Image (cartoon, rainbow, N blue to C red; front, side, top):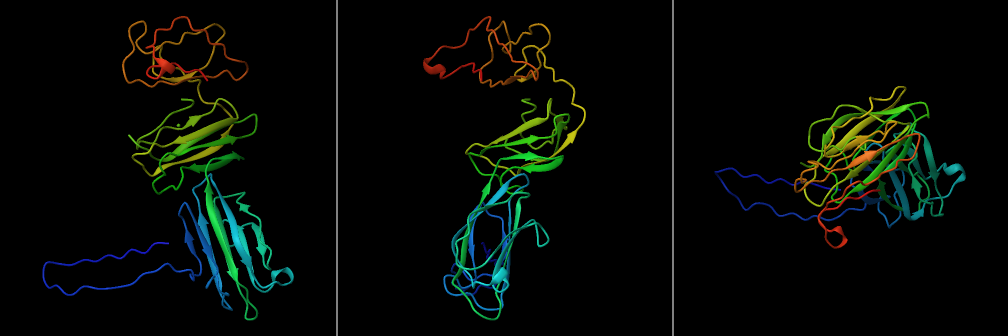
Length: 312
């Protein structure tokens, strides 16, 4: 949906230059659609489509996410088994699972991808008959519940710059006797523990869950963006080592033991440093977690607007 026009001049001879016109076209036949959302239609829409055309559109999201297709208008020549004019929707590519085969004048219901992040759509007309055609919109659905033995997850629009103010979660669930191992293939996030909190450009080492489920949450602010992330996940049979942190560390994952363990703010019993943001996750897979505050000396203000301790 974009055309780049580049004009270059050197240091010598000049001329009058050029003059051109441009306009949006609704008659295009097929294409690769990678923008965050948009629309496409049959050739010549809203006029009747021509005979003997074949158009293929490929709509691509980033791995681990889904696509939703919605029809605004639909009218193709009706036929038995859609053997004349037809709109065909598959997941992945031309040999992927057939999702829908459409013709006639009934407006199709919305379709959401099931097995992948790519939709392959083909429109074909024969030599006889015609119709007003179709117009459809598409949107990306980021964040997903994933199951299986392996897969990939990427930030919205990856490998292009992720959008501002994003907040999405992916939950990976494997068989109950397995764990989830995550390998970072790419990382470019402005300068994921629970299991880990990551940003920057350096790829972290692989991480493993302490159970058969893991959640990835991606957040972006309103300022600098990056390419985002791409991870590969797989079910493995052994868990990673239990995470440990030093007393007074700013954040980390804690695993309760038989007796009580102590959690301190950084610098305790001295004053904590300014401009800190520390998050601890206490995980006990086989029981509940009890937290007792033994001492609290945090700057007091209405609604704890400045310094605060939050327990969720």
